[in-house]
Length: 191
Image 1 (cartoon, rainbow, N blue to C red):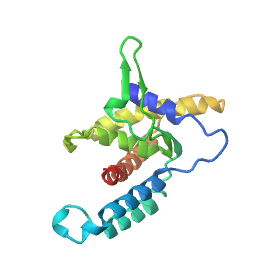
Image 2: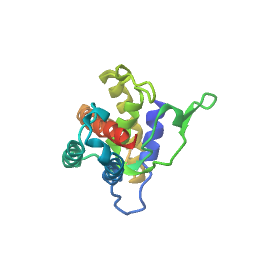
Image 3: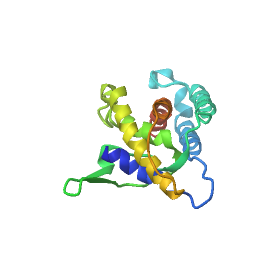
C-alpha cells in the first residue's frame, strides 16, 4: 500500500503543461543497437547462445510490442523505471516509503512502471517467477495506487473523491500485465 501510494505521488508530478513522450521505445532501440553491435559477429555460431532469439526476432518483437502497447491508452507519466526492492526506503517510525536511485527516471507509460515493479518481485540475480504477485495481490496494490493517483490528480483540478470502479481496476490490471512483458524484454536487452 505504501509503495503504491508513493508511486502514485511520483506519477502525479506533471510536465508543466508540455505533453511528454514515453522514453520506452527509444531506450529499447538503443539497447537493441548495442546488442547488435556486440553480438553480430558471434551470432553466426548458434552454439554460443542457444536460448537467445535471433536479432531479427528481437526486432520483430520490439516492433510488435510498440504497435500493440502504444494503443492500450496507458497515460504517460513521470516514472521511476527501476523500482526494485533496493530502491525503496521504508521509514517505520513515520510509516512511509521513499524511492532512491533515479538514474532511469523519465516520462513513460504508467502501466510500464507498475509492471516493471511487479517483475522485480521475482528477483534480480536469482529470478523466481513464482514470486510475481498473484492477481489478488495485484488488484489490492492497484486499488491503493488508483485511489492515491486519482486523489492527487483530481485535487489539482479542484475535483474531489477517489472512488475506483471495477472497470478502471480491471483495465489497469490488463495494461500492467501486458507492459510487464516489455519490461522483462527490456531488462534482457539491457543485460
